[in-house]
Length: 143
Image (tube, rainbow, N blue to C red; front, side, top):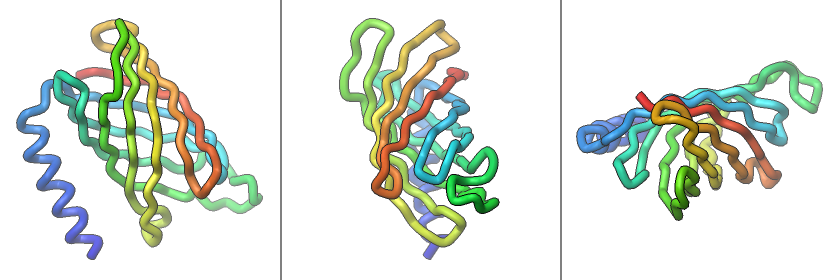
């Protein structure tokens, strides 16, 4: 089942990236119910902002529960533009993937991106993970 999901995501991604205008790499920190997590991702976006990407995130150190679990999350994110005003854009960025290679989760999230230069952007995110709020910051590099 996992292989089928991965293959379908890769096929959709390959078709989508063929028409993409921008390739964007990002690094982020997110405060979740599992503790402070770091992550990175790569996504392809059209000129209007619609995008699809792959992400990875895991805990920086031990969790709030005191265990040394890293809670690795591998998944995909979709980027859906909501509105744009000057250098600021608001996106819906739902994520889906596997935690600890066992549990499939969906994470609803919104992202506010502020374009700093043609190559760099900063963003703040807010979402829900494990029925708790998850907030974060991102640095995006447009390749």
